[in-house]
Image 1: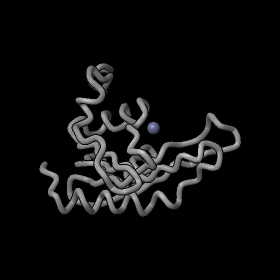
Image 2 (image 1 turned 45 degrees about the horizontal axis):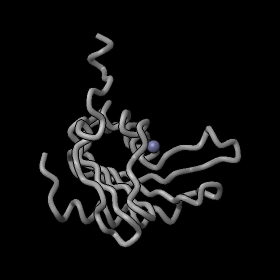
Image 3 (image 1 turned 135 degrees about the vertical axis):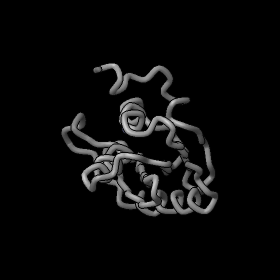
Image 4 (image 1 turned 180 degrees about the vertical axis):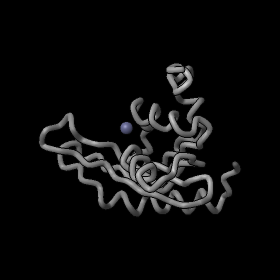
Length: 134
Ligand SMILES: [Zn+2]
């Protein structure tokens, strides 16, 4: 499931664009995510914080949960846009791994520069997964 350069650029642009909708008044760390399904559909998400801090939601999981709600479970890649290209948290890596351990994770900074790029199984080695419950 190859990610083309064009698809990668499209995902990065969508993540950077949607990041403007992030609701992060407490951390001031706005995150935008754009997720591509294996057949090329794109779902986006932003981080949504709350005055009750622990119930806040990450952009990556927001995008994935929206896609799953639309019937999608196989993903090719996710682009994550932040000010400094920060990596996804462990919880989001776990959720990515649940559906598509081989999906490509790309982080970019506010200029669109790629800071990290690789498959989920490399950034979450030894993940717990559905097989462990069989
Ligand atoms: Zn996260």
